[in-house]
Amino acid sequence: MNIFVQLDAWESALILAGLMILGWLVGVRARGSTPEPVSSTRIEDGGLALFGLLLAFCFSGAASRYEVRKELLRDDAIAIGDFATVSSVLEEPERSALNREIRTYVEQRLEFGPMRLDDPRMLQLIAEGRDTHARMLALVRHAIANKNTPTVHVPLLNAFNGVTSSHDKRLYGVRDHVTGSIVLMLVLFGIFTTFTLGRLHDQRGRGSLFRISAYVCLVALVFYVTVDLEQPRRGLILVSQAPMQELLTALEHPAP
Image (cartoon, rainbow, N blue to C red; front, side, top):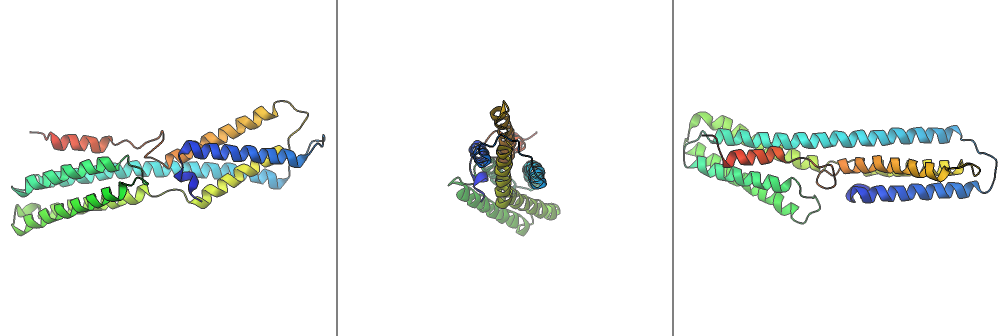
């Protein structure tokens, strides 16, 4: 049922538009050749109202999840930056070793940012991130065991925990999408509305085809933007990787 989110947004919008047009044609066929106008019932009016509410609900939810993904990326960059700041206070050799691992980790996070969830390399990249976590933890343990700058041991552990926590939150956040049953309900309501419009179609009127085409295009456009917001790693509306890129620049060129 989540196929509309798995497909590219333009493909999902085209499928919805096609199904809505098909629903309208079925409604026109169901009306037949009766010249008398057909009035709508409360059930049909309620269906149209519910469709509008459902469309607005889906769009609002997609926009909220998009903003959350932006915040998770920002928090991820901040957590890594905090860990880099605390580790820079350590004495050698752990300071340089941790700095190298942090730069490697930021490069991995930059690669993770725009990668599609169905990319074959995604699982390997996640595993590489876990391995980097393990190497950084080993260095932190080594620094504590050797009593390297004891005053920063607690902040160092807290900062490392922040890195792993932000990693997991971001990973689960990018996997959070609208429930497939809600999308299916939206599609069914869209078909029902055009079926109703087709059944109420006045054969003596002019411009009916233009009006239904404009309606379908507007609904498909809102649906396209909604699905595109659910896909921040492809399409037109992407989550900017600027915070992580700026962090990598700062690590490669530290202030004197």
